[in-house]
Image 1 (cartoon, rainbow, N blue to C red):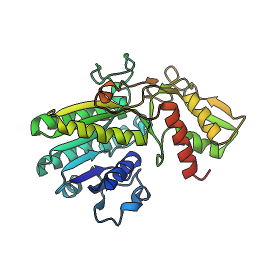
Image 2 (image 1 turned 180 degrees about the vertical axis):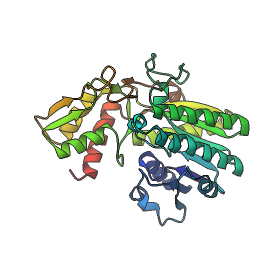
Image 3 (image 1 turned 30 degrees about the vertical axis):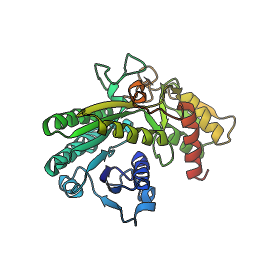
Image 4 (image 1 turned 180 degrees about the horizontal axis):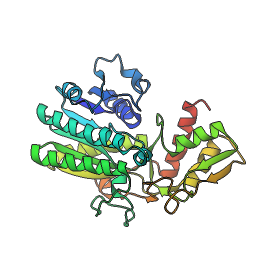
Length: 320
């Protein structure tokens, strides 16, 4: 089986590549290395079953060449910075929506019939139903990033039904762990490295969200793909997350403790619009994972344990 992983040198993508390679698949990665790193996949660079293509999905010709002879596509390439959308929405549009359209067109032209897409909990916006199930409506994202992911879902749905591309949408909670180079845990560590006495926290600190460790995320992706491949559905959607949530202030406490620091002063920015960290920041998020559990998957770590493990991993990687 020949698999293409877009964004395969990135945080989640590289962990997926590790799992696929260890299970004996032939894996091709296409990545422009804007946020991904060859270091994340260095153990595979000389492996006969592995190929790295340094190219950008915004280049339609590059993806058409990369996708030849591929059986399955795991589409994880995206600009991962939600905050960028309030300052440079065009970047989000091009890296997420244009890139996905180019990928779908390449799949259509090469008659590739299986796609797994990493979407996001941000498509729900400020959901009034908590935990939020996959059939929740209306989907009203409050960030450009969330809107781009929802647009990608719509494009994929149209290609699934028009061109019979069997497509699985996975709406991810906040994924944390080794190799992450953005997000609240990473930001807190870098801030405390610069100033171990004071920590700036965006918003009012009461934001609470679901966090999932990347190892649980990869298990979910492959488990749900295996279940989806065996049924007759042409298109389906699953949430992937933990069954609880944690506040930003609690995450700060965990990072401070993991660094062995004491007497750190927290300075809350107050944020925008009722304490959000930035425009488009969802204040509270908890996904229902009942549907995924019905297929036999469940997370090993809850949000707190996931954050604790991720903090240890990132601190170790940064040699702090």
